[in-house]
Structure formats: C-alpha cells, structure tokens
Length: 73
Image (cartoon, rainbow, N blue to C red):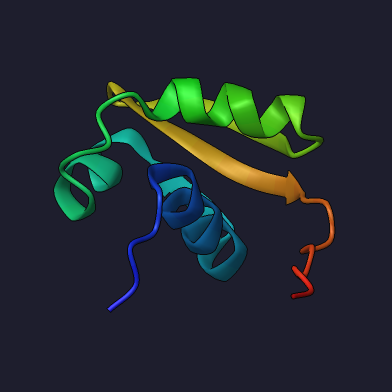
C-alpha cells in the first residue's frame, strides 16, 4: 500500500477522470476538506481548470495539466 499525499490523490483523480467535485472529494477522501486550496496549488504549478458551482457543489474540470514528471533514482 502506498501512502499518497492529498495532492497526489487529487492529481491522480484529475488525470484519470478529468473532473473532481468538492462533495465527491469529501466522500471519497474524507481527510481532504479544502479542495479549493489544493486546486489553487495546482494552478500555481501550471494546471488549468474550468470551475462551476452546481447546486452548491463546486466542480473543477481539468483543461490542461503539465506532463507527469518521472523521478529518476
């Protein structure tokens, strides 16, 4: 079992599904309560999103993500 950080879990979900919502995040990853702060961090890293408020739930749609960086040992 790997111990992923909150940001890594969010990145994996976005790369896989191209979308994440605040409520979905609270249900799937209960420890992640401040999704918007993580989205802001990703934007500072070059990720771009389209955001919408749908019935009180914030949805973040991935528009573009930097290529994954592979760590070399």
